[in-house]
Length: 215
Length: 215
DNA sequence: GTCTATACTCTGATAGAC
DNA sequence: GTCTATCAGAGTATAGAC
Image (cartoon, rainbow over all chains, first blue to last red; front, side, top):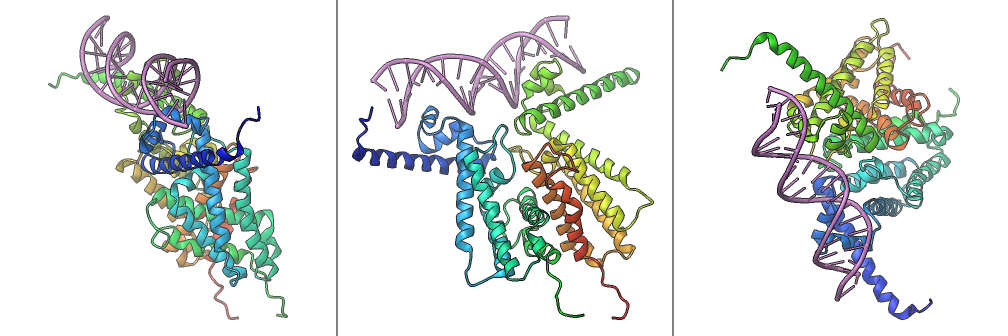
């Protein structure tokens, strides 16, 4: 059955992608109003002027919609982190800048951040494909640390399991505390996020190499 | 209308408290199976063999049940922390022990911890009374730090806004990462919780007073 | 006083007409 | 691709049996 005409297909698929984009936007709005787990398909359909069953043309079920948004979140965040990598700044400065971008993105996208870093939706687990994007996110941080190690600003231990675990604990701690206690605050005025630099400094201090000159 | 007989009241109120305790237990079981936000009143009623509307005799609505469990969680955790305070250990040892008990309790009570430290339930905000219990929780940590400062093991800055914020970030970070990435692991074998001591060490190092002897 | 029976509205999801 | 019709189940609320 190879009757699908290649030419006519472009417009149809394009229209489909536009509709999916509309659904995503409406779902994010709904979640920010009613909570991540409180999103209802009827509400999403109402927001874009279609009937609930029509959503099933684009997503097999509600959990698949969550998975799509989970992946979207990591795609956007990884893109932001890559674009924010300033080639002129290096070593610890690049790491500090990365931390600021990371926390800032989470506070600007609290709905996606909750979906990505907590597990607020009963029954939802990311698909293998989406999970790979979250792995890539962790690796971006590892690359920034590796550069600082290569520059001599951090000891090798920063790249150990302990080092990578502890920096993820620091980042998750700042974001988690800020989002659950003061979700609407910005980066600079957040009770917790304003200490993001100091939190990272705790980690940096632990992995700062001892000067090798004679004492 | 003061016809209520004092004698007969004891048994009735006792029976009522027992039922409430049954409901709490069933709700916790339901949440651990279907997620915190996925708990359904019909399911809770079914577990203890009554009809859903009967739950409304004990709780005005579903959110009130969440509030009751939120408060229960902090009561239990604060109790655990107070009992675990070993009067023989002091200073940094007491603080390290407190951190272990804190993280351990959260991993042993993941459902309550999620309800207490994240905001997984759309529309739920703790009542003023319950919120006070969460304040008391923060103050317990402050007391342990104050003792270490008094013993000379930590600098005064440990009790500053920065110091208190950063230690809450460290604790929340360990718990948050462990619960969302590996919820069923225990304290000792958790990918994140096994580094709880090292995470606290980052904080302790930042607030360790410099020795005052001559250099 | 306590619980049951019943009803109302909304949810996620499916089947089938057009 | 979108619709109508429909389902089982949810949370909530009220009326009434005992």
